[in-house]
Image 1 (cartoon, rainbow, N blue to C red):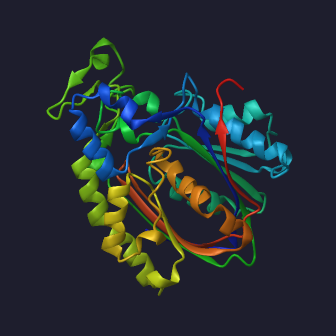
Image 2: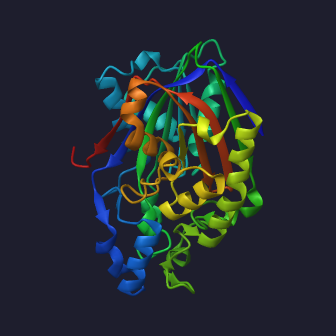
Length: 358
């Protein structure tokens, strides 16, 4: 699906990461693999450390901390928020929506839209699309887009396939109308026939959690998890990314008459360093134009990784001026999307830490 947006812009970007940092070498003993095999994986995939919540922290906790930081710094005014979108696959409750929880905790006014979107790795792209569409309404002048996940709480610490790369984080993106913003072009595709590639099998109404779903089972590769935990088919994910994503991004560039040289940065979802470097090679993008350093420093925080790679690598540049960027998200669903836009100058672009003891 092709989408275009005019006179819409990102005006600011904040990311929130837990202060709790865990190192891969300290967690290797939890896995049913030799130290040598685990260290080889660390080298190839780019594992080093990740940020995960230390206790029963929920999505709304990270979201509220981020928005309160912006309110305190004068970057947001409570009464100016016309719409609040929360994109998460780890909501506080089955009901009510996490956006309502955040609105209530912050004491925001009632004359606004609160909306939850259940999306993961491509959630930032989907959230931007929804936010830009809301800005077509005369009554909506400012949209706050929250991407947040605390999926470490649903990944087995004995699953070497997933646990070393998982991270928790939130991002707060402010969207506004801007007449000089130019045209934003986007592409989005979805394929639910491959939904089991990334899945938490139990915990919903299809398979409620019980004693049976909590039982820990070792798979053929030596990973130990239950049906209540995230299960990822790593080979299928890799093949999906290498097959579908280059075609999508390449098609977007071709449709808009844009060359790789004309794009300043390809800001992609961060599954791991190895996969991103292979993706860059497929697209003939220089590695320095596609940063791949998020998983080794913070972990894969699902839809938050695009804002995270942006604030971690381009904050100074985007505060000072603008860059032509290609955003791309791909994963659970399966869902894959890309967006070509001019980003910046931003009013704020920073990263803060969330501390459970504050």
